[in-house]
Length: 230
Figure 1 (cartoon, rainbow, N blue to C red):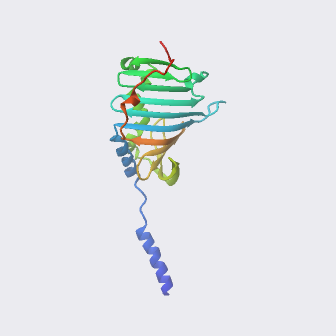
Figure 2 (tube, rainbow, N blue to C red):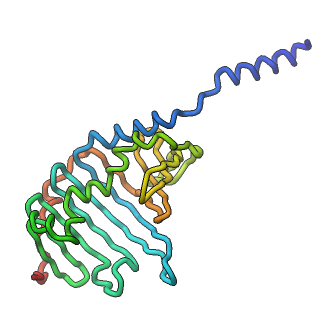
Figure 3 (tube, helix red, strand yellow):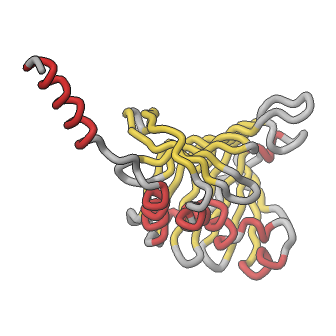
């Protein structure tokens, strides 16, 4: 065999020997679970887009949610087309300090409050207790390891996050309703940076896990001239 052919064959054999094995999907999802499970406080900033319904345009919302265990949170949200015919309700701030839930409507400069017990007992406001908010925000990521059966690694891809290119695993997660989901998982931090499902897409612009949050974030002081609602 000619020397150049021998060298070429050797290069092919070595490239196969040193090729990286495909990442294990169960291990990726376990690391996602571990990343979110040990966090007692977090702050997420995200943009959601829901598909159009009937003749209505897509609903778009911008949300900031901060949570501090066991029972404090703050959520600020603005949206288009998300509050029916009342544009006043398209912007809202909710603050819960563990004993009182406050809500504020910036467009009308109005606010109101409920005790924690009242909020938990009310059909509508029970969806906005700290426990319920925490479940919606991160529970599926804490439980990611449970979804490895049937999950698939679709590809590896770079996406824009916080002004930089971030390498991600793109994973199909067969979770039950409202899933299944497609997750873009940061290959280094194992944080979910993007999520897509039949219900729309979520783009995270900030994912802060475990960093201390000030107590002032979970206090509400009515702005000047604000009207209290009964």
